[in-house]
Image (cartoon, rainbow, N blue to C red; front, side, top):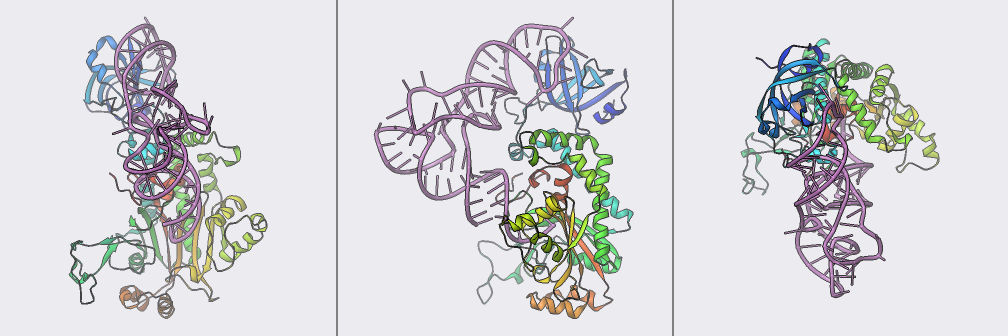
Length: 478
RNA sequence: UCCCUAGUAGCUCAGUUGGUUAGAGCGGCGGACUGUUAAUCCGUAGGUCGUAGGUUCAAGUCCUACCUGGGGAGCCA
């Protein structure tokens, strides 16, 4: 007999039907004559309650059914006599597929801290919280492809190994096959990368954007969705050394089109989550409530599902950097000297400023546009005022910058001039500049940090808990 | 990288101004219980107090360095 997934049993199973369920034991409890096993197979957050008449089974088998063990159970479904579930299974045959020593299995049937589970990342999928998080993560990855496919975007695979160090997005991981103990040297005594695998120094990508632009300026609209690597020594709840990024790039889009797309895209994903992941979201919402119940009222976050619905049903606020500086200068914390960092036109906004705008002033996602050119990348569209560029950052409560994007400078002379000003090697970037030489058009794009978005949707607090195996400074276990 | 903070049983933590044999809850194990919901009740085992130095008659407790975790900041997605 084929196995039936527990999701299907719980949602479609009928009394008196005989089925086979396979899964892992969450808890076992019971008395002299009857034992209850909570069985979970990852298909849904809920467990199947297996009812075992002790007299029908070998004592040694029952002894081996411990938390974490894998079972195949055949039995008849029945309306539950207990109150926690509507349907349950009366076991007729139980096979122990894989035992689990209760003395050594780290995941106990009790509350664990997220820190402990992070150190047991190989087994944390077996908890309610992490199975919920990773089902939601999957659903969001799927919805991303679905959204772009429906809009006629092409999924473009940009390279993971790159020779370009001009992307300007931070420190890179070197990729090399040279002997680290005895690398070949050139006349100047420097490492001779001509002898390396690719004949030049190469790194892991920090962004697929530049290659993405090449695709967009022919295919029209493309997006990338792949791993991204930054060798920054960042130790925060929202940075990873290896993370996944979605980067759409569109020809014939100006900054407003870009913002419209970003907003529509985020709302599409949130709607998809609400329509397809309700069980998991409900669980995560409760988890968050439990976690925060000891906090004072004003420090608790909004109910997760209410928060998602709020973002879905409200327009994002769109203001310029200049207007934001104005608002900050008129704000209470500014006047009372509560900000730690200065607020002045031309300097980048600090976390505290962004949080004030999003969480206190507007209480809504905010898109900031038209930043001073000196704090933004070389490729951004230079505005007519000569001072600002057509950048846009989407700021979310708690997470901060979730999207960073811009209209791209399509004018060859302006772009080359800016590159020289910022010491970007123009000659090496000949392939990028060719798009401006031949049929250059207005175009735009942005990058969405996938894990930051998953933080928002799941209500989790640490980015290391929304990626299966986190890579952070001093940590590449598993 | 900087600032703050923590490291005591499998897990979560308590351990007073340094002072005899280091505690609890949960989990594990054994037992009880005619259907439980992270079951309940009784019993039981389990600890080089992060590592290395130092101060002291005496260090889980004080000092120094290092390692690791957590929070915040910077860099950014």
